[in-house]
Image (cartoon, rainbow, N blue to C red; front, side, top):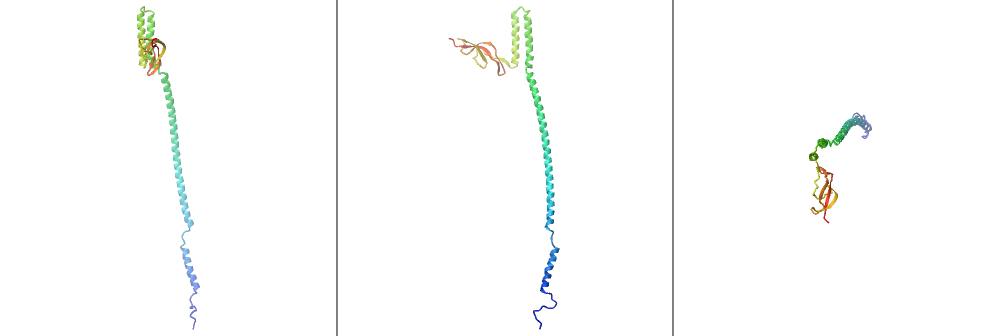
Length: 211
């Protein structure tokens, strides 16, 4: 009888069958192998490089735009400074001219008074009447005061008023029983104000208590 444990004739050995089964999947795996990671990474790197270049280009454009705006702002600032300097020079010239000719209206109004005064002097050489000469001079003086008042220059009313050192300058003191002490008894020289400022104080004689 043949031994049941002997392999059947014509069947491949077990080792050979196992080797064949192991080799088949290896061939299939080699056919279905995916793309290598290095190729994928290469594509991603090129795209990232393109993005970086585009970002740099945008930054360059933004920098160029900001530089252009800065140059324009500098130009406007320089023009404004030049215009301001020209305006200041014109204003200085205008102020200087106004200061130089500020008295023009007053001088124009005083010239007729001077003409009247000269006519009074000329007439005094031939006029036999001193009273007429006096009247003419008084007329000129009143006209002169009118011109001063027109330009806000007015006499200080000091007679019989209390003494005020802001408006009066005391030359003498005299005892008086008619007026209380520290009262202006006499005006030696009339003072004047221009608007609210004293041009010159009035020189006065002031009363004191009787002895």
